[in-house]
Length: 108
Image 1 (cartoon, rainbow, N blue to C red):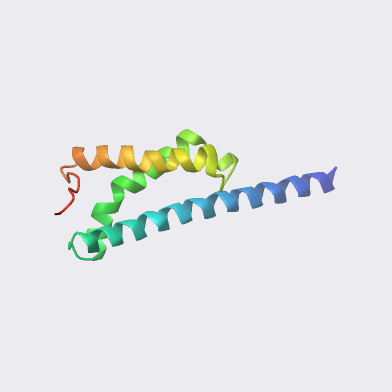
Image 2 (cartoon, rainbow, N blue to C red):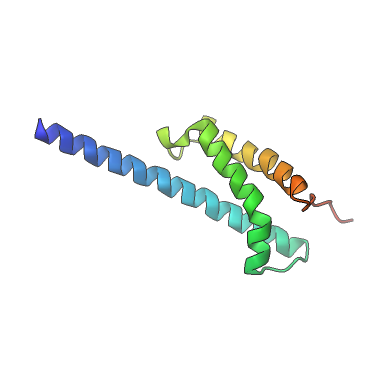
């Protein structure tokens, strides 16, 4: 019995690490997206600027990860990755508007 408990504990730790790594990669992708966007809109890449712009999108990612329960299948594209991506956009934009940050408009 002890052997099976150790195997289950190791599997649980590995699963937890995979889920945490997927969350870190999601956050890193958002931060890169924000840095590129701030550069493209000539807003400058500062720590305060990135933090201010990224928090609504990161909150959207966290919401999506919770709704999709991505910890059950870390790294899966469907449905988890799709839900997280959509949540980043929908929740992120809603939070930006509520916070008075507005949304970016294409420049011609």
